[in-house]
Length: 224
Image (cartoon, rainbow, N blue to C red):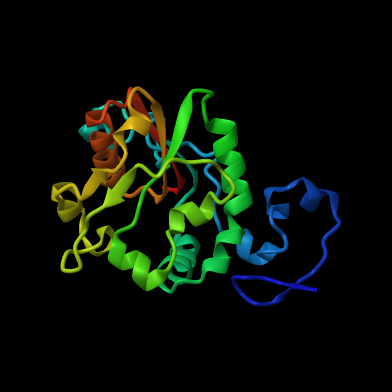
């Protein structure tokens, strides 16, 4: 009997046709049906065609404000269950939880990536890496080939993005730096991150890449 990584209960075997054909069968060994059903897939929802936010209009007010054409695709809505997941995975350092989404997120990326695109994950800063021991983004895309061409120079005394309000995030000084411009010069890049909130992180990373000669940048995140 396998145990759910989220609720720690035993995962019962399911054999109904409805379950076999549903998204819930994904990674049954990592999360039970009850837990996984509380995550909201964006597929089939009415979302912003630019950033994947659930909205009644084709383009949300955030993207109208940005007005820069950067396209982001996301798999899940950032709801209460996803917030609890990231509290354990990202902030409490439960690395095993990457298995809840890894396979499905990797397949989502494989189905979305264009033939000439290079995957670039959003990096974490050195202090966070020392404290946590892993980058939550690369954990979610384990098994994919990607380029480590960005570094995060956030200092110990500065706030993380999740600690900032919307106004602070939008005004935040760019802490990303390119560490290997030869690998990305002239390339088309698919940025990958865990959460798209205001879009500031993705755009700051994209700005650095474009200054290093990248032709195009778009992004994929696990949730929006």
